[in-house]
Length: 138
Image 1 (tube, rainbow, N blue to C red):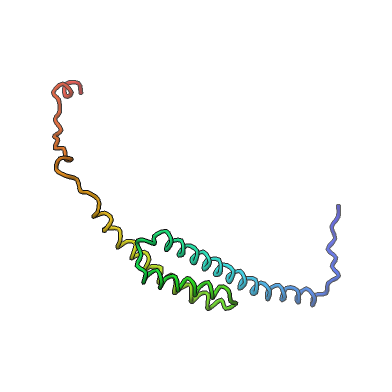
Image 2: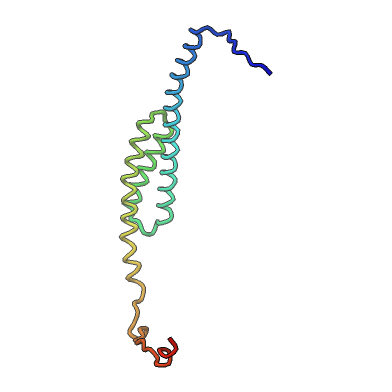
């Protein structure tokens, strides 16, 4: 089998195609980055709503309302075409999502305090004593 290197493209055509490919590579990279940003934002909105739902009783209405408003703002930004608006709304939600964590963490000690503490009757006082027979066998 013989392969010959003949091309009917002129040097000018080849250079134009390379230039076009480079220009489109930058556009493709930008589209890929935007898609990744949108995917991350959608995941953040979903996980935040789930966190609110799963911890409803541990969160004050004020915190839930504030964070849900930021979730809704992110969803609105995602519906549009402005990627900078999505990034801004995503950052704001990430900041307000910390309030959820703080509220959930703050509610934990209250639950622990409600549990009965160990009474003196539950504690067993013990002492380890080596048996003389065991020493002889060693």
